[in-house]
Amino acid sequence: MSPNTWVIEMASHKSRLNPRRISPQRMPLFNDTFARPETAPSTAGPLENPAFGEISTILSVLKVTGLLPIYEQVSSYEVAPPTRTNEYYSFFVRGVVHALTVFNIYSLLTPNAAQLFHSMRETDNVNQWIEMLLCITTYTLTVLVCGRNTKYILQIINDILQLDQEVLRQFGVALSNQCNFSIKYLVVIVCCQAYILVMRVREVEGIITPTSYILIAFFAMQNGLSATYIVFASALLRIVCIRFQFVNQLLNGYTYVQQRNRSRRQIRARMENFAEDSLFIYRTHNRLLRIYKSINECCSLIIVCFLGFSFYTVTTNWYNLFVQISSNRGGITSQIMQWCMAWLCLHISLLALLSRNCGATTREANITSQILARVYGKSKEFQNIIDKFLTKSIKQEVQFTAYGFFAIDNSTLFKIFSAVTTYLVILIQFKQLEDSKFDEETHVDT
Image (cartoon, rainbow, N blue to C red; front, side, top):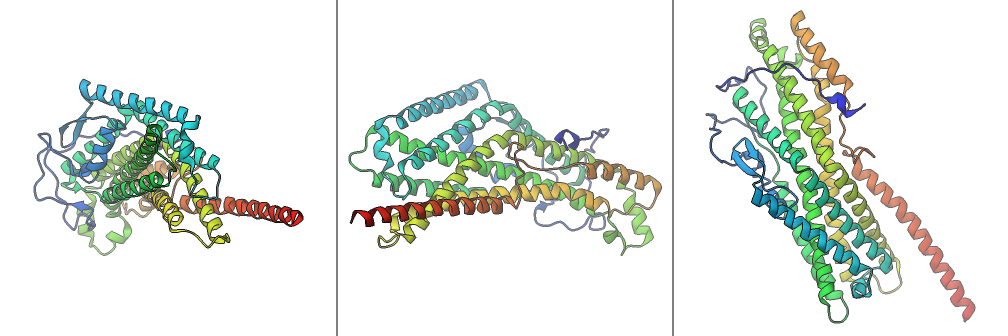
């Protein structure tokens, strides 16, 4: 089904200025993700919204490197486009990146970069050349797509902030997130790239030329920033997932399971707010679907390139480990083991993070129709509201796709490893065939 069928507009309603408190009788108990302040915080002043406080470090890195616009924070629930000076800065950084990209591609095609291909692998230098070219392509495409989608990224941020503001006014609930993983992954990215950089410099034979230094440093920076953007996309998906959870838990308060242990008077008092809450749930769910679709459109092309680069890197490093272990040269060396483990740790962890957050957000977006089917609506008026919402929900198909080629969810990591295993078997068979032919030729010569 076309993604355009995700959104069905409803008539807007005016949110109340005073927050409406939710008693335990009105709402089911939330988990720690939903914090309830005693008083609603003021929205005036350039304050930092808690929704983005946990990913502020990654946001700062991406803004400094030109991948995100240096936006101005108007209030806790609104950001403004970058000033002219900040916009020029982003253009300058992107220009430098493209100039270095052209220089590095030119250097890879000349003999100046020959000393970089001192292989710590059983694969030949062509594979390392392809790996570096894939890295350059991924990062260059990331810069181009981010520059093109500047307005859309700002719109996504503002949509999330406005939704948080409406939830705070309507229910007195300040939504928080579980995005602390972003700092941990940023540390892992920096450590892995620094370690790989040191190992690459130590393994270069002879005196390192300035061209080689530029190639090595820029290669590490490209890897790190491409990986950082994947963490940022995963954090955005996590933020959207938390808001889907809030909507689903709010709707779950009206299900048969929640209502069956209450008296008729309690049910009647609770259902008095059903029409208003259902309208809020309907509108919020549609807004979240729009945000979810916008994130997919902004990040899908970058994710496709990164998945291709990760697939190639994981495959070559597993193949290198297998060949080194199975060879008769005294076993695998510690340098090769550390080199391969650093690459595998970086890419496998990022693939797992992306798959998990995509799968969780998609599941929360699709589970709404299942909760709707269990909503208690005794009167005809309430049942009509439920039927209209349910009719829209069961017809939609929510998926986070890699530029439309395939869906990304919890099964993506398994599918990638299945493909890696298949290619490893093919590569190993060719390796064994090559070794057998070499042994036959050696035996004939002797």
